[in-house]
Length: 186
Image (cartoon, rainbow, N blue to C red; front, side, top):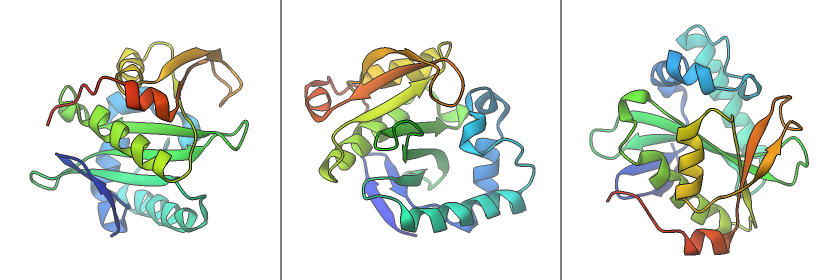
């Protein structure tokens, strides 16, 4: 398994098929399903074998992705538990734009893990030639909107052109990230 980066408390690494049980628990969690968009291809995953197939598909897709994009597991350095997921994926319209997506198991909420991981991954993305990142947030997902703002993302409006639903659109550029107050533990 390839390590992408480390923060003070997290390892961001490639997914492996050995992650199937933990990934199923993460993506299948009832609370996350409320926010897990249909477009992520994660609805209807019923067992570890199906999740393993998804992880294998992601590994194949990863090889063909543009530099600076991909899907990764978030693992706690203290204990090695899979705590979440983070990705940088091309947006459907226009395809040149890249969206940052994050999921965190509810038992790890409130610890600053997503802010820490997103801030570090945004730095990494900008070092790998990306010039801006976007976050698409359902209007009633206050936690996701707050995380976007904590890493320096600017709200640029709402749009229904992505994934067929009205979403808040946040944008991050390198200068925004550099001037953001880093509000993460560790």
